[in-house]
Structure formats: structure tokens, C-alpha cells
Image (cartoon, rainbow, N blue to C red; front, side, top):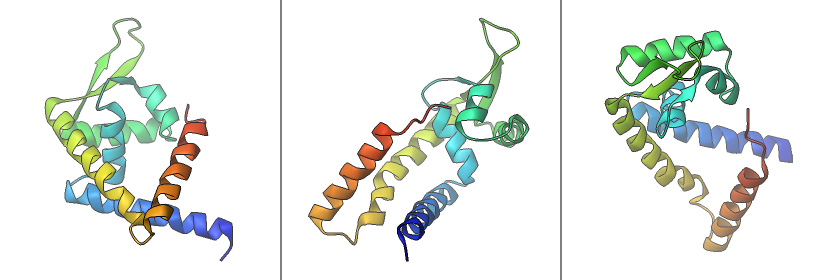
Amino acid sequence: MDYGDKLFWISVLIQRRYAQICAEHDLTSSQATLLCAVKDESKRMAYLATSLGMSKNALSQLVDRTERRGLVSRAGSEQDRRVTMLGVTPAGKVLAEAVYAEITKRLPDIAGNLGPDDQRDFERIATTLVDTADLSP
């Protein structure tokens, strides 16, 4: 297995664990990602589509499903009425915080078979990757 294969399988491990956590909260991975993206502040729909790597149409459909569950709500922007903002409802905030807490607690378990030194190295490398990545949309 080459380096690319190993990175692929790391992503599978992470996605599988993430999906398990989401399912335990009766959410799809996409719904949980959306909730976590807006849990602290409302965001423009266009920004969310770009940052989540979704088409505007796909995001709208995801928002429709999540909105029907009473977890998010759309509102017009006070600065520009052409802009639609998305935020969490009180129920969505509670759920987003619970999912986020589980994610931060349980995702590190993927490195559970490593020794303490390797776990610290893995954390350091993951931190460096995220800190130096361009995560802007």
C-alpha cells in the first residue's frame, strides 16, 4: 500500500467514525456538518455552499430537509435583502453542540492503537496540516 492508499484509508476511518456519531444523533453526515458550520453564528448560504463544497441547489435541498426537522432557519440579511442567512434554531444549537462534543471526543480514537509518543506525533501533524491548509472557500 502506498502513501496515497494510506491517506485514503485514514479518510475512510474518519468518515466511518463521523457517520457513526451522526447516526447516534439521528443525523446524516451532511446534516451534522451543516449544523456544526452554523452552530456559533449564522452564515450566508452562498458562503456555506462554497465552503462545504456543495452546489447551491444541493445545499438548498439539505437545508430544506434540516429545516423541516426544526434544526435550522433561514433569514434575510439586514445589510442585503438578496442574501439568505442560515442559522441554527435553539433545538439545532443543542444538537450541534452535542454532536460536536462527541466528534471532538471520539474522533481521536482512530489513533487509539498508537503508543503515546505516536499519538502526540499524530496530533502534532494533524494540527500542522489544518493550521497550514487553506480552508477558505
